[in-house]
Image (cartoon, rainbow, N blue to C red):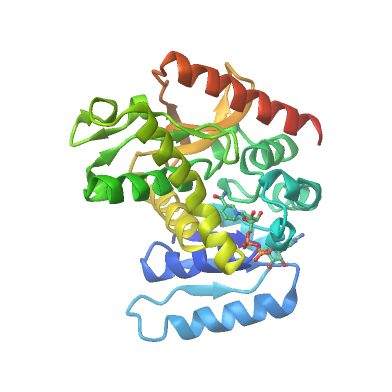
Length: 301
Ligand SMILES: NC(=O)c1ccc[n+]([C@@H]2O[C@H](COP(=O)([O-])OP(=O)(O)OC[C@H]3O[C@@H](n4cnc5c(N)ncnc54)[C@H](O)[C@@H]3O)[C@@H](O)[C@H]2O)c1
């Protein structure tokens, strides 16, 4: 049985739940939320949503004992309304660190032996805090990191170059936040480095378009959901199917002494390999800046 729990079923948690169900990635889904009315409504709506599906997912009401045999916990609790008028993922930390303090002991005491995939912002720092407070092995606690931002980069590049996103290889790396950057040195279209085709100015403009993509969505609907849900679902699928997906997730970098987003191999064991980046000189400066940003944010906890 493929069993997943989601803690926090707001816009992101509920869309991720629906994505997991409709893509037939799970067999059992346990939902938790501090708001009982939201939880009840989502359980009911998800049940309605799978009525015409051949594969029925067992939807389970919140109970900590259910975590003992759960394979993956998706952590997506928070309060997106904090961002209104405050376009920085750091703004949510005061609340989300208290949610981690509440949940880490509960997860630990439940006998949970699986993998925690964190989405809650600020993603890198909250992932690190979850690992520190649960004490679970670092390879079993990681965050969606720059997977969403990499998707946004592919969106911008595919539109500019009129190419299917599947032909684009490469990564956005660093903090899932303002100090992230596209590692253009890693980006290839059909195997050809994009730096051979576009000028630095054009690449800078594309970096900006990718970064702004999230804010276009946020300004219009007050949250983002589909982009992150599809990334979270494919990472969960990689864990459950042990398919060795290489994806830019927030994982622990011992050389930097922190969690940060860069490509890693995801399998049943969690993070099984981290791929070193071959950054240009300019990108290395950006990398150092993003690491400092994460460290200073973590120091405020
Ligand atoms: N990493 C990414 O790429 C990415 C992308 C989008 C959103 N996010 C983050 O994901 C989180 C969720 O976003 P959202 O739009 O769903 O927010 P939301 O406000 O719609 O939902 C958050 C949910 O968490 C619940 N919650 C709050 N405190 C809780 C607690 N102590 N225990 C259990 N549940 C609790 C709330 O009741 C709410 O239903 C936020 O931190 C947001 O910034 C991250």
